[in-house]
Amino acid sequence: MSSVPIQTFHTAVHSAGGPRPLRIKEMLPSQIAAVLREDPRLIVPVGTCEQHGPHLPIGVATLIIEHLADDLSAEYGVLRAPTVEYGVNVDTERGLAGNGSLRRKTLHRMLNDLLDSWEASGVREFILLTAHGHDPHQEALATVVTAEARVRVVDAFGVNVSDLLEGQIEPMHGDEVDTSILLYLAPELVNMNLVRDNMMDRERLRRYRRGNLKLPAGSGASIGRPSLATAEKGRLLYERIRARISDRIFLAPSLES
Image (cartoon, rainbow, N blue to C red; front, top):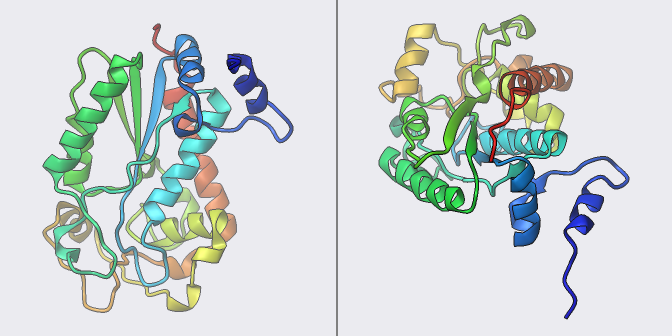
């Protein structure tokens, strides 16, 4: 049986159509090892299975973060792990149709186990990408422990996009931001006929993110003004977020293996 040369994969990556993401689930072990020798980083997208309003699919946060992970992996030649599809949802939304949540300790332990195994295979820096601002979810990511590898937690919605918005000053939930970005990335998954605006002040938004505020019945877990969303706004938002993450994370010198 003849072996598959490592060069075959790298040639395919740079074939017609431009670079493609380095998804480890699609790669041979020898190919993964070759990439790690050049750049020992691994992107780990962490999504959620959570309602974001009646007009958006249940996995909107996951879809957004997967697009970012793929684009950044392709652009910088950094390995991309399979998506962690579940996060820590807000307790006050428990029971909404389709919601699937992990406890903070469960997500924390799962990530600890995954990073430990990947670190043993040569990864020296982990980039945990998420688009979910619930405090316990963020805490689960921020407290992951490794033996020696660096862990960088990147909240896509931590980027300042206030100048691109009309009815909000910051990302909320199933809002002008989520809806615009998905109209840009996957418009076929958005039903604008079902949009419901539900604005709240910053203090109430903070309470919601902590899990201490139940949304009004009928809101469908949407906060903000999704009625103002457009695909063009989504393009600008996505490009801003991608550019900021590129500048702060991927253009910095990589760690030596």
